Amino acid sequence: MYLIMIYDVNKKRVGKVLKVARKYLKWVQNSVLEGKITKSNFETLRNQILSIIDEDEDTIYWYILEPEFVPYRKIYGNKKINVTNII
Image 1: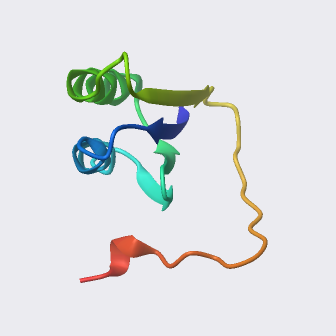
Image 2 (image 1 turned 135 degrees about the vertical axis):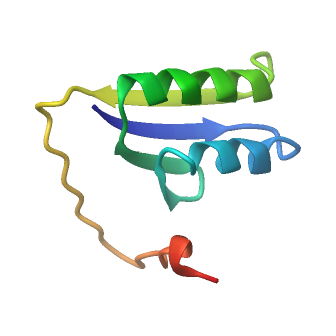
């Protein structure tokens, strides 16, 4: 499946959420990650994220797209650098 994850968490937890999510997804924008993921890995990701966040204060959005969905992206404006290539 294809997953888009958007998060809005307290600044105390942002680093932890991003670190866990980047194990499974590609970071594409400040609070947005996306990529192909297995159902098993999604369950693991979800459990790890839920153990970090405070559900009374933080919000996580998961857009789950079924396997037959073929995503594509069009970018307009200033394309952000790919931070995964920075050493």
